[in-house]
Length: 190
Image (cartoon, rainbow, N blue to C red; front, side, top):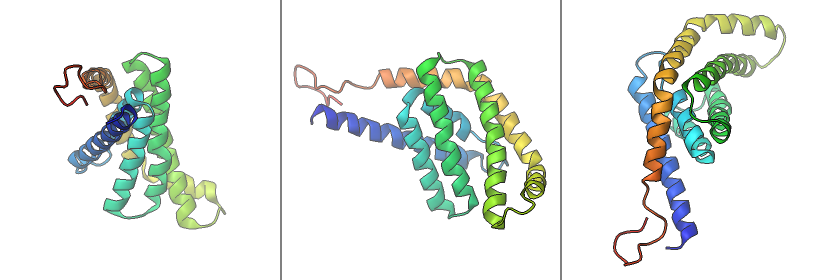
């Protein structure tokens, strides 16, 4: 197998595993409203895997749509989750893993998710923009406690787990077998 094919295979596997773990984490916590690990995991994957983290976010969004069907939330998911992974991918290129920076960015991004989901829901469900500000405000305020739960969840998870997870994922990636076969011909050489 040539080097380019091996790299492509490794990238596909990393994207698939990342997306699957995000889905599994979402299912594991779905009984508790707005307590989630999706933000943390996609942030870690974006930070460590770069574009593959963004691809994993897109696969996650597509699989969620296949599982749950279409709704206004699909638009929000496809806008937000790849953007979150992209923001953390840019951070991964510019800063060392930091629980403080990650928590501040996660806080801002979670606030943006709250606003974005309300904007999309009000904009897509009403079909008109008359009195949009009033309708948006009512819709946003109606979801306040769910947003608070999601923000608190991320304010707890990111300081505790972002740095250890990025460190563990980096160690795991660095232990990936080489892309070239061993000199003596033994082993799989993945």
